[in-house]
Image (cartoon, rainbow over all chains, first blue to last red; front, side, top):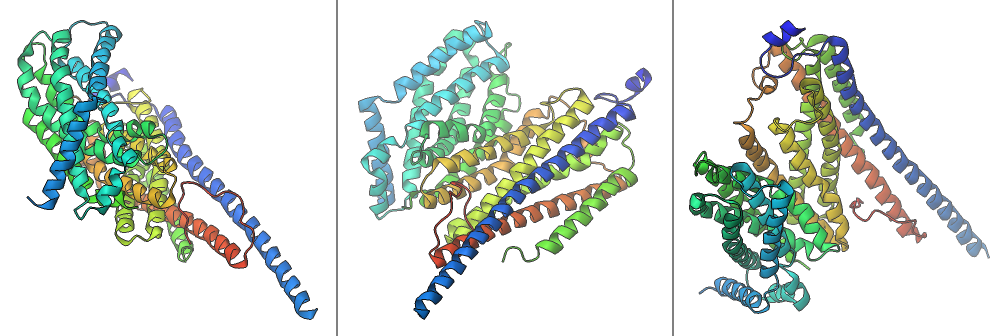
Length: 73
Length: 226
Length: 240
């Protein structure tokens, strides 16, 4: 290890593979986590849209029923 | 004189006269700067500064003192209907931008006229670097004035106006600070002024001034729409 | 119709991401200096490039907004900047991990690209409180466009200035990352770059589609005289 440090130019010597692997994995994990968090937030938005559409649909049906009653009466 | 130039001169004169009469911002900015120097003396535990420390203390202080003035730049316009007046006038609205930038430039130069000698007396062993420093001050002030005017004109119409200016302005003037301190550091070096990359840094400052001056001039019209 | 083309776009994104990841771990050769840690480069740098271009695109949309006075461009500008800020968070975190693995510190000031990116990120982070502070929606949209244009012009200038400040201090040991890349690494890098660009575009389109759907629901409510639902965002522009 020390010989490697003497040969390599500037900067720090390369980490051994098992240690380096943790950092690389960490970086890619951060990426995936951020992506999934974004998806979760978007999922919440879509849920809200679905709920609102349901409300509007039942409102429209109610109104259609009320109109028909008026017409029939 | 064309109407635009008359308007420019009129607005600039009004601003300078008003500041001279009321002395709202300038004394506060100067006092703030000098007190900040004292804080730095104790914060850094040094009585003499040179090189990068001197450059950093000087520019950080000038920047924060400038923010004080920038916060107040459009307050009169907002409170007394200056924006409406310029909307109604048959001139290019960017004239207001040019006039305000010039006014702010004058304030900053006045601030430096007072505080830089005091800085030299407090901290510098050798005043030889102060002459060329004028060029750096001028170019940096121009950029600070352009960006400061632009941000101030938007912040004045918002809530938390005093918070918004430092928040948005500070990242925007980082290149300016890089250029200014880059040029100033060798000027205030311990062994006497050196002109290491002086021309390059002045060009960076000039480029910043050009870009932000143009951007500000181009978009200012949209800021004044009702 | 914002959702149109979203499915093929997202499929292309997944395919490209899968391809790039495979290339990174099975094809690209090991770097002589940094070893396995260098693999982070294929994640960090494409994210950064796409984020920066995204900010500039936000500025271009903002110019369109000011010129046409059509509010949809403000929504595009907002979303472009928003997604780029999220990418920016990923850039800074992966940059820190890379710095720790290479230099032993979570942050290094000698990497001008990273420092300049931090400054750009800090600026665009102020976009949200800036919008929030302006109550009138019309004015908010206009001022936000001015901000986006100013900030877009700032990005290249800042990059140049920071680079100049660092160039004499430390030689750039990451120069190998951008300069003389061997063929396999360059190919892998370009595939990663394409994948991130596709991801950015997909997320922007996704966000706009969701906003549009929300806007259509509001439109439906208005048409039926249905009661208006709870509060909407004070800063995110609406799409209809």
